[in-house]
Every structure is written in structure tokens, then in C-alpha cells.
Image (cartoon, rainbow, N blue to C red; front, side, top):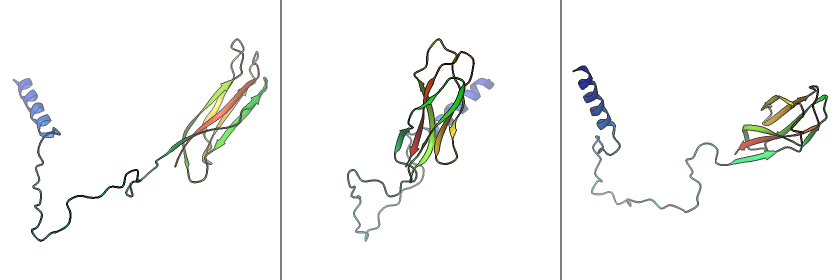
Length: 139
């Protein structure tokens, strides 16, 4: 019996919250003396004036940093003025697949509107590697 009541309550709640229901608040009728047009003109390809936030994401990459085996190195990229870093990553390439892999010790926002990657390639058996930093900038 309790399960039936619970199911019925759930069904009523879902029906009350359904999007296809009519509005519960009354709509105001247009006053007889109101001569304003009922439609707005829309300019195609226009940016909304009430929009808040970012509208464009740009991917930037740093120049490649060559890191010798037995050393550490960094690669950084900074977002241009008027944009904000919202994320990033890195790419390693040019490494030997059978060599000891380099360690990524840092891949994060550098607190200066950019992305920085630090690579530790000092492990025994490591080979030289190239790294680039990638930043995603919103404007």
C-alpha cells in the first residue's frame, strides 16, 4: 500500500512539473489604448546586448622546448590581453618509445593569464624530448 501511494505521489509531482503544461499565472491582456507593436525587430548576425560572459575560445600553443636527458625544462604560453586562460594541457613529442618516459611535474595555470608545463627528464634511461604548452583562452 505504501509503495502505491509513493508511486502515485511521484506521478502527480512529475505531471505538475512537466514542461507541456499551461502556465498557472494569468497573462495580462494588452490595454485597449496601447498602440505598441507586438513584435520586436531582430538584426541577423548581431551579438546580443544583454549577453554576459565569454563568447569566443581560442587555443594557443607555445614554441617547442627541447629538454635534454638528465635535465628539466618548461614551456609556457600566455593568453593575449582582453582574454582569460580557462584551461590548458601539454604535448610531448620526439621521444623514443623504449626510453624511460619524462615526468610532467607541472601543467597548470601560471597565475599570470597563461599555462606552464614543467618536465623532469632526469630519470636514468631517458632520452631528449620536446614539449609544448597549450592554453585555452576565453574572450
